[in-house]
Image (cartoon, rainbow, N blue to C red; front, top):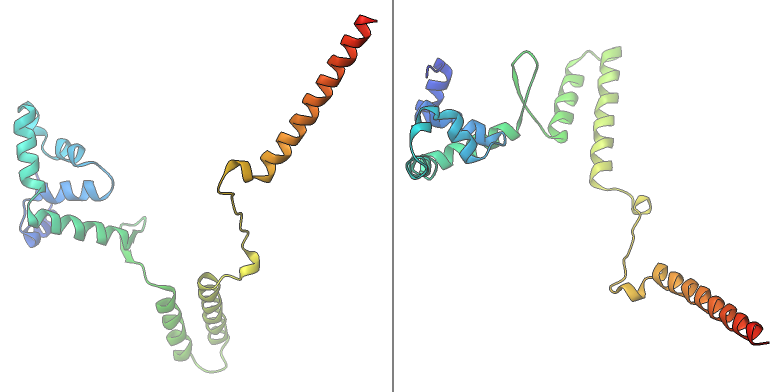
Length: 181
């Protein structure tokens, strides 16, 4: 299998073979270890189950592979890939607000752009505080009873069933007394 220079360079950085790097990438995006192994090491498909399992375990249980896998998962979770192929690292709302504030302060005083940047800055601050501290009155809390018998809905249902049963018994008694007469 031929690999790009970038893949080979990254694999060399981790001290593993290129196929292991690709396997780690597949696992980091959601493939199981078995699926990733079968995709990357297709040439081993002729081997029996025990041989494949031994090879797979040898590659995946090494310390280098585990470190590389955790690093790849961490990098994947902190990046977004743009359609043109560029990677962007995500930053926190606070960092974004600081960058907007710096950009606003760098613009000339009295300019329309500077005012817009300060509006964006305050908007970011407002969003950050509303996410952190949601008002208590907006939250709806539903407390479930510890036992089904304590549930008001079940109690209401049982009362209605009793009323229906009593009405049915009363009607049956009335019918039986009418039939005897």
